[in-house]
Image (cartoon, rainbow, N blue to C red; front, side, top):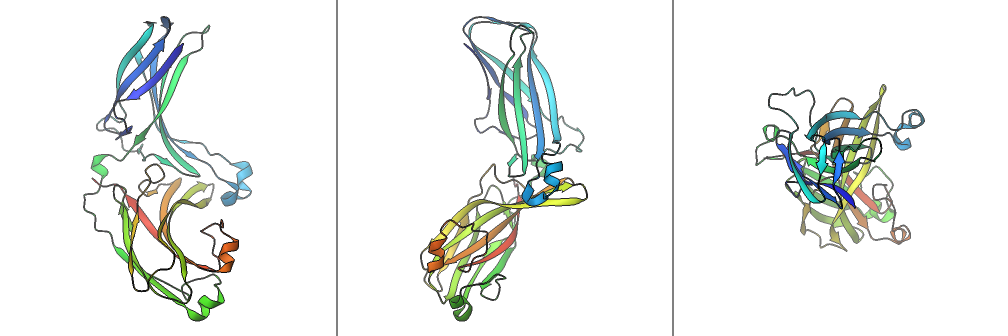
Length: 318
């Protein structure tokens, strides 16, 4: 039995670029193993891919674009020698970004998107020469912004007033909604700290039809520069339901949305790519038509849906 694994000093695996990346390399061997060195490598990159929905004919030519390298380092943890049988722990400490190092290579926060993925991987390799296969293990760790780049708390986000009526909708509506009308108003911030929940409020002032549900959709907008054009894709991150069934008119409902860690990051506006976010308030009215399409895409305008979509800037705070 030959097992190699990496265990970081922090169980949540969250580090900042100017902090030491510390942990242990753990080996479990049934017999002693001779090796030609134990090396630890760190690779951080922005991985980009352009799908057919956003690139069209470009997809067949480009597809997966060349990754953008953020960090690439390799250090020898132990020189050639022998690792004894049983369990052995080899401590390590690695600095990702040296003090005073150039800021040209920006450490973007870890992000797992549909078209853009920002990943940091730690790999250990026990080299065993040509006659034996090298032993290796890889672990993803999470990068957050340096403290010097963080905004001070509390941030005072601007609360935007929104109104959802039959006149604000650009798509066709049920005849009952067109004639009888409806009005939903509320407030929601356009900037939110990733360490806090997105908070707001909503009031159903009037509606000709009973309401089936009210949902808050968190959306990501991933844009990639491809040649002389920008390929952009909007996708759903998560849905938070704030009301199920008809709501008393005039009753104020709280909006409270928790932001998922790896699926969100501070808003990024870089040259080759950008990661932005939006929040969409969707009102689902009771109708026979909606029962025929229970699994329809919530972002697609329907006769029984009314919605309002607003930009949302995400930031990291102290």
